[in-house]
Image (cartoon, rainbow, N blue to C red; front, side, top):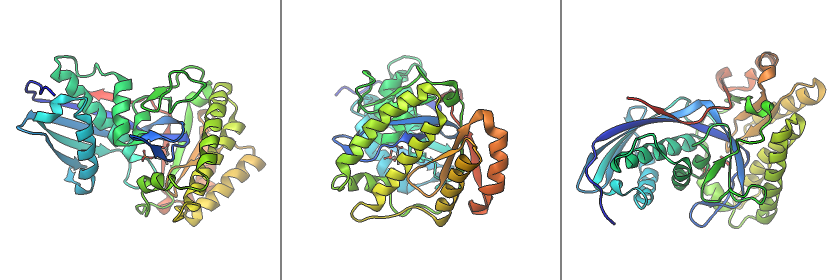
Length: 349
Ligand code: PMV
């Protein structure tokens, strides 16, 4: 493969985390998903990554998180950059300095690998553009999404704002297992301004990684049933997002979140990531929806923290209720008030 001319440059991207309503759980081939997933990008929860590049005899990188070297992440980054070098040849004869900052605390139930890998994929794609003599922000989102997927599956959905889908479905012709695409058409206003308050119930690092969880799907007794469920739920969610129907949305989001955790409990070995307060919060959320007609529902990522979902139109009423009923279930009363976001931002430096 031809090596590129020498480049000295710095770029900076801010990329959001995202919350999947239909969950990706289990992989096949080269980081392709067992089933389609649908998510929305957050606004306040993001990773900001500055990547500086200078010529070197061979490839290499230095990584800092919040200004500190974090060796635990080096293997994952190295594997990612090696794969990326097939598509971005400048990586073979340059050294990268990667400085990342998260806007949210570590282990807060927010997918940091999604925002981190997406920000890094955007950064190296911009540098690739510069190495070709093009503008740094003239990147192709689909290409970046495919690249981000190699770093972390869920990251491929973080290169867009609003809603996106990753994984081939019959309903959306352009959908693919190799990259995510935005779901910009046919989203009802209710779902364009959705709020997500993350209840930080337990902030200790989780004991079982998502990588292991994906692996356990290979021999899972419910594997095929889960694949069928996720395909059906993807099609159903696309219809719900167009209709604006909140009750069906909450039912589907909760069924998906509980299926994800059910799959963890029923794998071999099985495990549980819930905290006692996770269950208490679920009961209170469902009771508020059913008895008080409050438009609230929940989702969960691979952890004990609850993503409380509600329409922007009810923000004041829901916030009062959260402070009254849910805040006491959170570690030190901590919560992150977030909402559906605009997507990545190229920052001038
Ligand atoms: O992208 P990964 O390998 O960290 O997997 C993420 C899986 C879930 O967050 C649980 C679901 C999803 O679709 O984001």
